Image (spheres, rainbow, N blue to C red):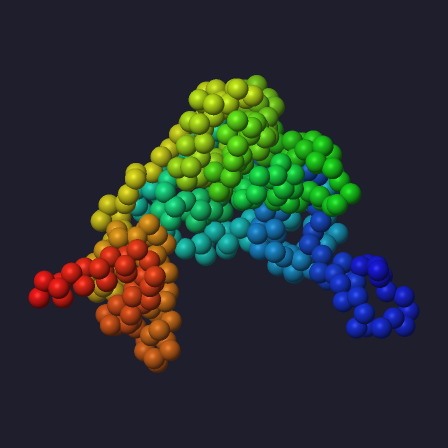
Length: 378
């Protein structure tokens, strides 16, 4: 197989199309937080904040080193020195990063101020402030991922890392996903036991202080009698220092709590109290109030009239999709309006979108059953 880095002189340009993927123009900054945090810990809090924030910003925006250099108006050697050289003068680097950060945060959209959002923000703030493990548990589509990521972008990008727990059960993929979020190289030649110390080396006083894990119900193995190795990795990071210097936020569905309760009863190979005795829990209500659903609908569709908003609320209450189905219905309705050359959604278009979104679902089946019953009664 041809090298991915080099092609011999006169080589067929159509051969091995992957060979240029390591070209300088395509590379990111290629400096992981395992390096940045070791340098940042001797910097001032302001400097450290900029160094960590920039890594997360570049990763989340998927920026190449060239693009980052252009945006910061700093050369790549200047950026590299700021992130890796403890003796470098980084005053201008700090000013440039703070300017980008101010613009970035100002452009973040506002969210509807509903009860689940308030619960989530309180839990995440507590985890960071008190350096404790926090579980934020709520039914699917009630607003965990997007609000949590919004909070992280505003308050956590200079303090921690946000990643999604892989849905499979392997310990290896969990470690690699966390390593990827930290910018730590996890090539095929590395073993898990080599990566774990690099991950742990990113956290602690003067370094990273927060881990946010989305889809946290996947931290538990399907076999409730097996040791939850993924959860144990998080606990070991939390327990590295006394008192702990790392807060942990787990965003999960109620399945997380079900798994925890099952482990408390059935797992003889692991002491669930090791986790249960440390965590602080925040649970969403089982359902959303009409007022909260209306607030979400008006936030995403402020131009809709009262009748259309009421129809969206009714749709959400009849579905397990909650906020998600309302937002997607609004997106679909706007697309239908644009296809008709209209500048706004009409009630008829919204109804068509709602019917399309309910096609094949239990809601549609119930509606058809009721319609048949009415015809028989007539």
